[in-house]
Length: 293
Figure 1: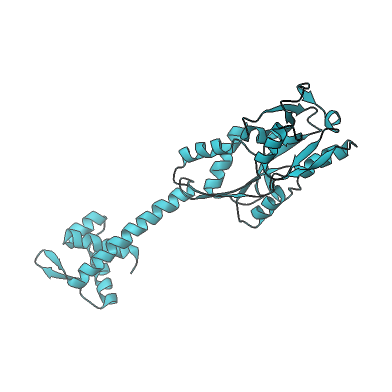
Figure 2: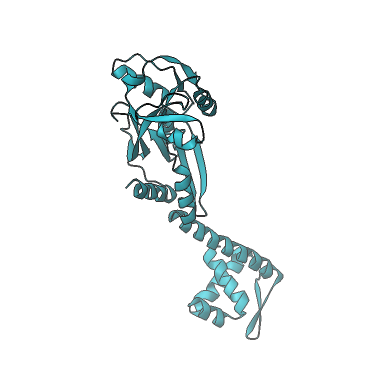
């Protein structure tokens, strides 16, 4: 038996008459009678008994009717769910995120959830190079990463280029609004080294590129502690703008590092090139594309 035959049987039981059931199903009577006979032969039992113009359902027929209703309901639910997943209304959004790379992500996810409230989420944090591998391995479909990286295997949606800031205690005498790397190379610098933040190497590389020798006294993986140390005038640091947006209320001065080519980091959304995204992922890409514009 198939779902089509079960739906025929539901109509026969509920109408108790081949003619009425055929009319309901928009069929002629002979094919419907043949389908009923085929089901009874397959099951080797009578499903209905003829009593005048109407059928009486046998105990076996009543059992089949209960299962037929369940299967019809499940088929309809499956059809609706598959359709919703295909439209991105339902489904699962799997996305990797580089720590502190995208301060607006919570706001974007709220916006996405309002449009697609049935979508569930898998959000995985890691450093950018590892996120690229997770996308290749299909562990996540999308990833928000810091650039530059070799991205030949990926489609990239540039989100923004993030500036970096030199931060000191507000006990220090204020500097100009902007500073250069050369201006701050002699400051006592404690650099952020949070796994996934991906800026420690970028900072060192920027100083090296300009043949500067910074006074780096160490690194700190706990951003809250780092901000406390800076605000108490233990050290200064260099951090991406996103981090300043996340950690507010500390007694610090923040100075944008001038000349964006010296100290900035593009942030982008990536997914596998020539790979069809799930509709949930595509809807998220479309939303971010609008935000990026």
